[in-house]
Structures are given as structure tokens and as C-alpha cells.
Image (tube, rainbow, N blue to C red; front, top):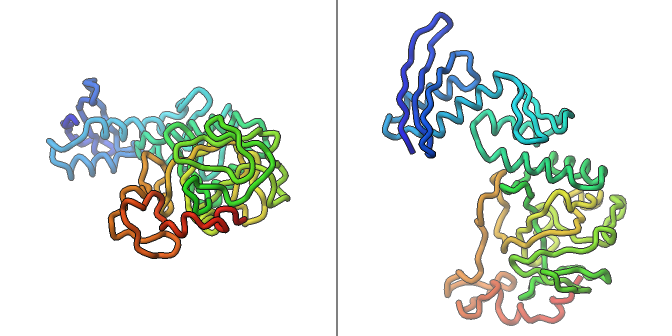
Length: 317
């Protein structure tokens, strides 16, 4: 972090701020910030309320440049995504939804995490189903959503109390888990990619329980499963958003299991695991099902032996 030097001068239309700093890459810059700049108040407040030795040259430059982007009109955020004023365009078409507004706010605030949301738009554009693209936009508009840096989105999956995290429902279609074929109840080991042929996933939104890989909101998955997993989904792989369950679940053809989940992720950008690791529970841990005490050595999935190996529970619907 390199400190910033600044000078506030009085002008005809108000105070101007002259800032000089250096980025982490060693690039020196000088900027003049007029009182009409969109982030003038933020920049002035930051400089006046931060000790010079504690100022961040990269942060100030992002605030200055973010304001200039909005003031100067058209800026390409990627090859296909453009910021014009305070509107987002994708391939020249105006986007007016919660996602586009969120991207504008991130750019305005100098938050570089906007790049993940831009990549989300580009990933979504590769989804072959126009209907699925439209449904997913509706899905993220109606609720909180969390995007990864590479443009995927986080969802939740409820599974059985089984060491292999078996799916609640079973089917006859082939599902691949890290390239290994399965039918029936599907294992969901941490880190695995689960996929099935897109043509076998039901794209009819009017059918609730049907073929496909399912994930959904925290509320939906937490009510549906006995254990809860974080999964990451490429918007390209969404096939349908069924109307049942208040549009809270998704049918997809592929997802990756991230980790065991404990609670809902509140941040809009996912930057790493804030999940529960069952292997790290202490000796006073309790079974996640019946509540009985379990020893650290037995605590491989947060369950006691009786609950972990209850055959009826393994294969319950």
C-alpha cells in the first residue's frame, strides 16, 4: 500500500482535489478531481479522515477512475458488456434488472468484484436455452444471490445423513460423479463435479418433481435435506426453474460441491470458504441429527454412528 499526497484548491465552481499516488504495481499517477465528479465527496472524505501514511493509492485511484467512467459515458467492462452512463448493455442490448444495477453500484464504489458479475453475464449468454436464461434472471432478481470471481453462482443442496452425502431422491438416468457413472441415490462428495446429459433434464417449468440435478435457495435446501451443502453452478448449465416450491429450486445439468454448509452466505461475492468443516469439531461436539455427544475421532461428518449408519435414513425419499 502506497500513501497518497493531495492538495485541495479553491476553484470557481468549488474545491478541486489534486491527488498523486502510486499503485501496488509501482505505477505513479496524478489526477485532478473536480467538484462535479460522481465520487468527489467520497474521495475528499477519505483523504481528510485518513492519516497520510495510511492512505491507499490503489483505492483512491479506483474511486477517481470509477467516477470518471460514469462521467465520461461509455466504458467497456468486457468484450460484450458496456457501461453507458449508469446503464449496463450486453451485446448492445440494455439490461435493466437487479444484477445490472448491482454492477453499476460496484463500479461506482470502485469495487473490483464487479468483474465476477460481468463474467456471470457472459457465462449466462452461453446457455443454449433462451427460456432458461430468462428464468434465471427472474430467480436472481427475487432473492439474494452470491457470485464467484469466475462468474458462477452459489446455491444450496440438501442431502441425506450419509457419509457419501447421498441425494434425497433417486432416478434411473445416469449421473456422473467425477466421471464415474451412478444411478439411484447419487453421492455428493466434497469437491466433486456432478453432471448428467442436458437432454435428460426436464425443461418444463410446470412439472415440479422431475428428472434433473436439483439445487436451490438456502430455505428450500435446508427444508428438503438432512445435511446442507454449498454448490457452485455455471449459469450456462441451468435448464429450468420449476414453478413449484415458490420458484426456489433449480434443475441443472452440472454443479460442483464446494463444502458442507452452515448458514446462508450473506455476501454477494464469494471469495472463499466460510463453511463448516466437520473434521474440525472438538471433542464436545454433538451429533447434527440426534444431538448426542460424539468423540472427535468419530466425527467425520458431524453425526454419531447410529445416525450415520441408519439404513432407513440412507434411502428415504
